[in-house]
Image 1 (tube, protein in one colour):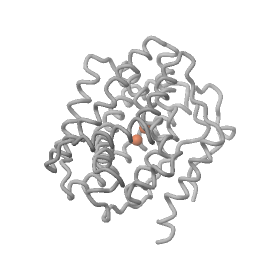
Image 2: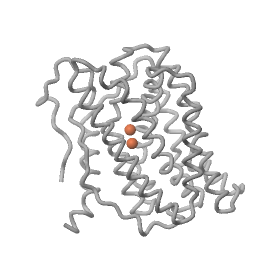
Image 3: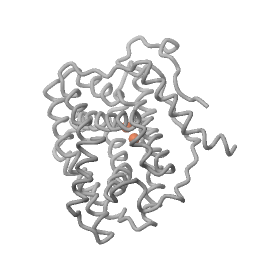
Length: 294
Ligand SMILES: [Fe+2]
Ligand SMILES: [Fe+2]
C-alpha cells in the first residue's frame, strides 16, 4: 500500500518556495494496538523506557503547540498553493500524531506512568520557552524545533538496532510518527522562509531558544515518571542514560550536529531519492500488520 509520492513534476511547481518534492499524505486509516506494552518497553536500563515515555508524553502537548503556532500565519500565505497544501497536510499529520500518542500515553497511564503530571509539566515549560515571542518568532522557534524532531526521526529511521530495542507495538508508533516527520521535515522552514526569507540573525535567535531547552525539557519528564514509581536516578541509571543520549547510539550528540547544520547561514533541506525510498520502505512496514488482518 502506498499513499505517498506524487512527483512534483506533475504538480504546478511554478512560484513555490516548497522544498518537498511530493504532496504530503494524511494517513487516517491506521489501526493501533498497545495492549502488550509493559512498563519496561525499551530493552536495557529502565530509564530508557522512561525516556521514550517522555518523548511520547511530550508529543501530545508539543504537537498541539506546533499547530497553534503554525495556524495563525497559514491564511496569510498567498500565491503559493504548494506551500499552502504542505502546511495544511503537516498540520493534519501533527494532529494525528498528537491524538495517537494520547492513545499510547493512556496505555502508559494504566501501567502507572504519571502522564497527567508530565503533561502539565510540558505545558508549563512550553509557555516559558516562548515567553515574549511574537507569532513570527514562534514560527521561527517551531521551524527549529521541527528540525530537531526531523533530526531525531532520521537517526531512528536509519538505526535498526535502536528500533529493535523498542517493543514492537511502541516501535510501530515511533516509526510511523518519525516517517511523517521525515516527510514534512522541510515544511516549517519553508513556511518560515516565506515570511522571513533568509533573516539569519532571527533564525539564530529562535533556533538558539529552541536548542537551549530541548534536552532539559525531556529530562525533566523522566524524573516525574521515576518519582511516580518511587525511583530516583542511581549512578548506574545516569550512566546508562548518558551513554544512550550522548555516546551509543548518541541521539542527543547526533541531534546537536544536525542542529548546528540548521544554524549555518546556507542551511537548506534537500530531499533526495534516498529520502523518498526510505519513507516508502517504512510505509510498507507500517501497513504490513494491517494487511495481514484485512
Ligand atoms: Fe509530529
Ligand atoms: Fe512535525
